Amino acid sequence: ESNLDLTDKYDQEVKTRMSKTVELERTQSNLQEELLLRKETQSNLSEASEINRVLEDKYELEQNTMQRTVRELQNTQSALQNSQKKVTDTSQSLEKVKDELQNTQVELDVTSDSLSELEEERKSLRKLGRNMWQLSRTRARKRLQKVRGRLSRSKKIDEEDIMENESDSTFQ
Image 1 (tube, one colour):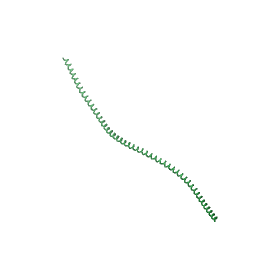
Image 2 (cartoon, rainbow, N blue to C red):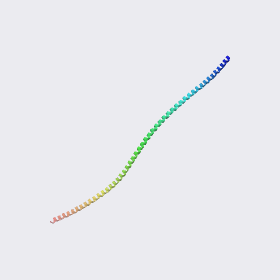
Image 3 (spheres, rainbow, N blue to C red):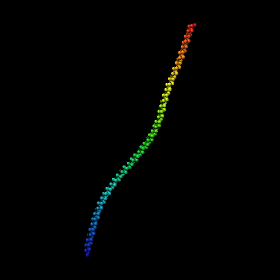
Image 4 (cartoon, one colour):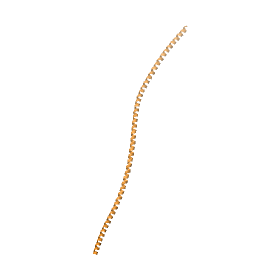
């Protein structure tokens, strides 16, 4: 029995070793698979990290672009507000100038009317002056004619007197 026991034990030991060898081989195979899986996972993780880094870079670039665009938009809005203020100021200034122009036009119309009236008065005054001159000249001529008439009568009288005196002196 002892041999039998020993053989049984040996067989059992061989079975146990065989099963442990199979288990070891299975474990080694699992280990190989897990190592391959680990390498693949590390490779995938590396790729994912690289992709994530690229995406982060793209995101950062997009953020920078968006910030730049926002700044440009703010600058454009500020420039637009300044332009609108200038347009408003210019419009108000233009309205003032239009009002001043209308006032000036009204003053010009009034001045033109006054000038026309003054021209008419000047024409009337010139006509009146011409009439006065003609009247004065006519009166002066008439007076001169009267004076000439008197002088010529006076001269005739003097000549008659002289003649009378001459005739009286010859008579004497």
